[in-house]
Structures are given as structure tokens and as C-alpha cells.
Image (cartoon, rainbow, N blue to C red; front, top):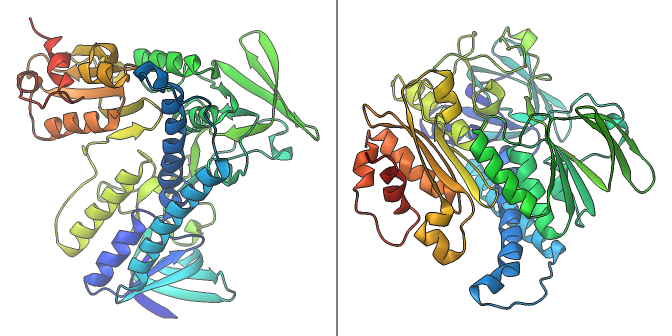
Length: 460
């Protein structure tokens, strides 16, 4: 039985950099991966989807170019070329990550499935056959999450798609039905609509993006509907049947029952942690009621020396949060710092077009917390840069404290919304108040310059 100083289970966006840094710090380290180096982000998430979304945006830009005086004519897509470009980018990122691992002294990459057999002991079922037992002083769980499969009659009898398998399609669906009106479902829905699919989105809540403010949800609903995407809300999927050619989806909205015929079905109704096969009962690590590994503010489980990072521990499920988890654990263990995950900023961006960049609290949350707050809103149709570039859809919205003048949160539904949001995040991190941004000299004509006008709405 081989002993390591540290073992990381899962080569995702926390596991890879943590493994490399621990090895560079002189720790004998093993990184165990059951599938592909890079985790969801590189292989099935951020990297491939954003590559394909860029192609979809090019289609859309070409179709609306006449508004800018450019007549392109008929627009055709080469879907095989789009997919190949995506695959090439994924392979580039993955191979670069794997090369970095193999070139790190003191770090061993093991392909296999790890399961706890005791508190500090793992049994690895190797991908190329055989079994290996290993122990370590520190064990880090970075196994991520997978698609949640809802309990719908007939779903287990059909060939449905997930956010992973939809990336393997070789042709554009004729009619794609999406179960779930949140980030994953909306990104894929708009993308395939722009590639030529008829798209129907089914959302169980009263509106898409149920956690966001109603005006943000309504604005994006209008944008997507104008692109001929059908959105059905407050809906329950009752059953699904499949014949040789098509899917038959029975839904109910209120008292109305409807049958939808489709060629493809994407399940995007949330994600669940990958903890079921870890054998955590053999080491005593506690899970919450949804199966997430429970950790303290330093990311340590109830068992000393065992940590969890990324989506598997619950909380905000974003790549950048997983990466930040790694930096916290590494600095605390190797540099002796006392960093915590409490009160850290949680920015995120949904890559629909326009993008939705979010930081801090929403107006809905401010109301729930009964805070003293004010709202500043400016539609993109009043933003000079948006008008000049024909990107006038969406809005900018900020929540502020009228007494301290601090920015409490922002939602930027706009072209390059994530970049604009990041400027406001930096202001929040540095305690820069909204009145300073109101009078700040920002380059003209940029999207960020419109923050002057956004906070001008709060002038008295």
C-alpha cells in the first residue's frame, strides 16, 4: 500500500492546480481522475459551450447585419465545422492541463475510480484494469456534480440529452425541448435556436431565472421570445413517450394540458453532487440532505485531514468558486494563512446573448432582508455604446445603500455584461461608492462609461 502526503480525487478546476502546487511545495501527491483531466469545465461545460455559443452569435450577428448597412444575404452554418472547432479547443485545453500535471515533479496522475475503504485510505479501480490501495495524510474530494434527472414518467425509457451528451450531437435538432429555464437550459436553448432548431423551454416556476429579479427575468424572456423561442412557465412535465421518429411530451400548466412533439429533449433541471460512489460511509464524512459533502469555512469535513472543494460541497456551483476553494485550502495548509469561504464575493455570468452578469445581492434579496436600499436602472437602449453597435437589448441595474453609498449588488443584462459587472465587483471589493463612479472619468465610448449614467439615476 502506497502512502502519499496528499491525494486529490478529481482533476477539475480545483483539483489540478491544488495537486500541482502541493507537489511543488514538496508534498508527495497523487491526483486520481476517473474520466478526463479538466473536469466538467473544460470537457463538458464552460469551454465547449462558450466556443459553440460564439458560433451561434456569429450566425445571429450576420442575420442582423443589414441594420448596420451590411447585406450578407443567406446565412448558412457548417455544424460539423462548429463541432470540430469546439472539439479542437477542448483538446487543446485538456492536453495542456494534462501536460502540466505530468511535468510536475512529485505528482502522480492515476486514471481510475476512487472509493474510501477507511478514514485515510482509498481503493482505486484502475481504468486499465486492476486495483490499487493508497493512503494519505490529506485527502481532497473534488468530484463535482452531474445532471439531476427528474422523476418523470417515461423519461427513463427515452434517449434524452444532458448538458454533456448534447455536445456530441452531429446534426442540429429539428425541435429541441428543454426542461429547465435557468442558466444551462437558456444558453443551450438560444444557441440551438440560432443554429436553426425550433426550441421550446419548459420551466416549472412562474418565470425563467426564478432566483433573479422579475424585471431581469421578464427582459430576457422578451428577448428570447423575439428570437422565436417558445417559453412555457408554471409547467409540470407529466409523461414522455417515444416512437420511432419523435418524442411526445405531455405537460400541464394550470388547468391546461398540452402535448408537445419534439425530435430531441434536453434535461437541464439542476445538478446533483457526485458522492454516491465515494464510499463515504467507510470514512465517516457527513453529507447534507442533498448529498453534498459538508464542510466548515476552511473547507474541511467533519473528519480531520479530509477536505471538499468545488460543486461537490454545495453552495455556488461555478468554476471560479472551485478555483478559489483551491487557493484557500492551499494557502491555509502550506502558507499558514487563515482564509475562509465566508463572505467572499460570488460573481457569475450567464452567456446568453445579451449576457447576464451578477454580483452581490438582488433587489429581491434586499427586500427579503429588509435592507434600506435604492435601485438604479438604465435600459441598454439609452447606452451610447449599445446604440452605436446595435446592442440595445437588456438593462443595467444596481442595488445601493443610500446612506453609505456602497454598492450592494448589480445585475447587468447587456452585451459584455460579465465584463461590466466585473468593474462593479472591483468597486465593491475596494469600497468605492456609487457617487465616485458617478463622477469618475471613464473612457468614451465604452460600455463601462455608462455606469456614470446608471448612477446619475440616483441624483437628488
